[in-house]
Image 1 (cartoon, one colour):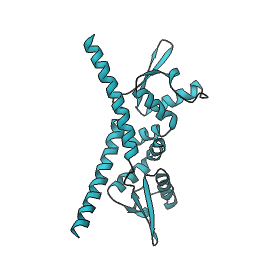
Image 2 (cartoon, chains in turn orange, yellow):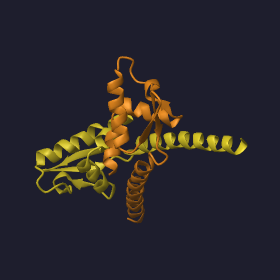
Image 3 (cartoon, chains in turn orange, red):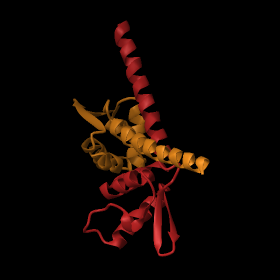
Image 4 (cartoon, chains in turn purple, yellow):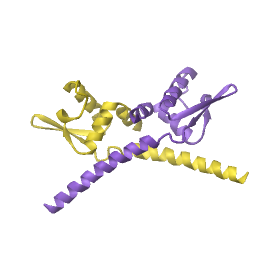
Length: 101
Length: 101
């Protein structure tokens, strides 16, 4: 369900994590989060992104690496484009009606 | 801030309201929400969408009409496209590296 992905992205810290991971994978400890944030708090945000199927994490030795899923934002992009297409089709139709009247 | 828009869309009821409004404006009372939902609860969801600058409402007589903003999903679409472009550029660069090695 795409609303879960929207909810996961509805937080400034998680959005910043996704922006960072779009530039490349990162160990959880190197994620650019507010400096006062504890590692457990960061892990909680990562878990939310993982549950929303936006990121995956792999443990390599003592480091947990975090990466954006290849299909991460496909559902979000598709939903958004669909609504925009419906809405602009409606506005175009209204425009035609006004021209004709 | 786009994370506020994501948060506003991170709820199944609000997402359904936006989907409906993409097809055309609607009085708040005609929004297709779960039947058990009270009008104050619907209004609360509409208010969240309004604060996130996704919808506007206008009172006409005794009816409050709700409509999608023309620029409603532009910020969401742009943010998403930017992250996808960064991520696919990275994957392309990795692909080239692998071909060369």
